[in-house]
Image (cartoon, rainbow, N blue to C red; front, side):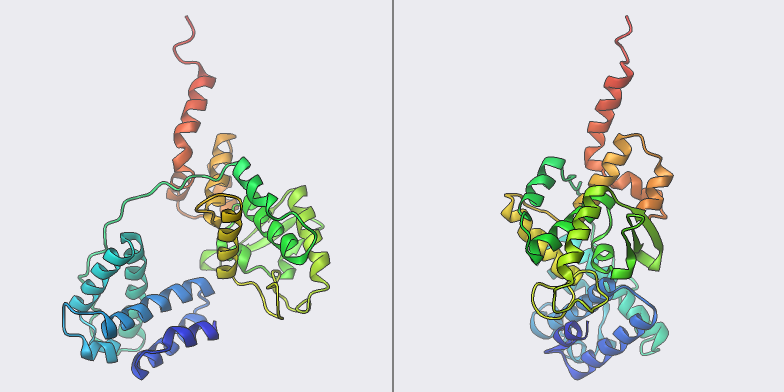
Length: 318
């Protein structure tokens, strides 16, 4: 993360860079996950860059130099620019990150009296249904991992864990060696809010992990505590690296939009389709809100309804 922080603060004013370094220290002290910290810091860094280079709607010289000078109109201009150049969903993500940044400036650092986010409306987004990734599609992705070398065995083990446990990108990406128990065929995940849970996996996943661990022992970084290692050098494979790997594997399999959360949606869909208990699903996937089971696998809800209709046979009794 130190490299990422250096990159995120590069090109910013000394004042902006100093505040972001201090904020990162505060986030680390609060035990925020690396992915959350990165997304928060990225939002603030992008705002600072926008104010210095792209803001034409309102005067932003002072705000580009010092975040305590940022006003509501600066945030609104940045948010509109994000909607136009990226998407409303991305703009919403930045909005949430900036809320946390200016809240920290106001409450923790006492550098501002009021947050410029106070009356900025969240961008409205369309709720998109994420399609589940089918078994035949997963097979195509796994087929690209056939081989006995380090990278093929590592990638198969990673993909099978997502497919078999429905875990989040960062949960699998943040695993250490001690988190995997091949005696019980289980994995210890640390989810959002540092909530911990243990999840079982099946024989095929266990075999894939075992094969990876054998080849991992010959890797230059074998003594590192991280479960996943980069192909070259003595360094771990971070979640963002896994994200890019999954995208590459998807393209190689002839599929678009392959990412970890599609297997999470698939897990929820298959669980519901098999008549699994919603409470148990929440425990396995690390959810506390009952809205989540309704959201995940929602794109396959019609299929489940049709299966139920056929099974009940309503209107077929006479």
